[in-house]
Length: 274
Length: 283
Image (cartoon, rainbow over the protein chains, first blue to last red):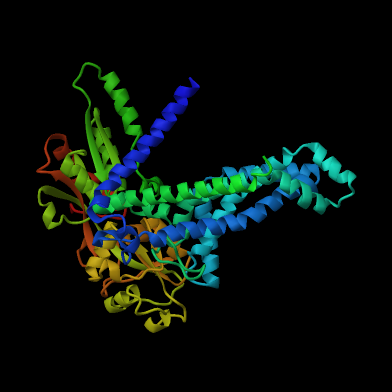
């Protein structure tokens, strides 16, 4: 029964990958792989298919969001667990759960009507890499915080008691005992959040400006791979359509590489622990 | 006059009218034994879809036993689906190109595209040369065209959209020559982007822009080539950037398709066309 379910899930995934490859193959065979990385820019209706600015856009937006959300999220979890009075931490946890449940399009809409005009007043045009990073960071922060909180909660009580018995200060206990003990869970949370950030479409589509260009500052607009597919899907035919499937393939490749790297880092860091 | 907000806001993604399916199911059950239920499938332009859906609703009300599915996906999809006969009728928000002469276009309304600015922008009009200059990044500051000292935010549509094609065609702009600061998908996203940025310039369909102005959105429509942008000027054909909204069929429409196309072109649906700020073909 369980094995059958897993089999079906795997088969669907495999079919999707095959479909993606099949749809891309037409164009890949016609113009080759390298053109997607060496063309002058992205104008699929004029036969120019450079995906590099969008790959960079995806990586920069996600990286920025993760860098911003990780310290905030872990700090939130620490506050919740070790500093706040119980009623406040319950309230705070509920708030985080609520934030995690809000659909991304709501974050995007808020970004478009509040955040983008605000950034525009500071440094036009407003819809930018920065707007994307901020909205995404807000979106993935609850994931980081909740997973971190859960991994702090799963540390055996004895650790805390022993540390207290040693007469350590609260911060020394957290830094020297709790964080190292929860490290694996923290990393998992960050990877989960990173995955969500890379795959996010609607929110970044609404606030990033979607211009296909390598950004020089955080105030420049960017287009992510996911936004590229969503933006042009409805109107694409022929080679243009195939190019969007290649976009999906590149996105999948990028995510696979990231997962592989994360896995490898995980194994290296925790080789001594396990 | 009640104008459903639903039709403009909800039709951005692929939408299937589900209510008629239920209604059709009920009528087919009650009419058990009579001739089987007839179905008509329309796919294509997201500009035409809300209009076609409203017309379809009225047609279904008058012809029990007929079910009409309206799905969006862009003019290109309308062309492709009509050609492959995946759909009975394709919705296309432009004239047919020469290589599409195997299809028959049946105009049901007209639409215009106009340039819009934020409501607080002091600029009252722009010449065609100035608009071209702004979109090709030769003019970067509103001061150069008589406005405030502020950089211009150029809002462009995503590649492949029929609005972009029509705009670029009129101003003889190459796709690759346009230097945008923000690229948007549909009309509503464009209007929200410009309403939130006092220094932005963009272009959307006249109908959508007029509807938003009436509902207090801080944007304004600029005249094009000296002609005021309104449904009125689109109707009398003086507005330069306008387009027909077509129902496209493979060959001349026949049977149910023909009946529906005739219905959509008739004066029976004129009020629906006007409610959506398009311009009826029939007078």
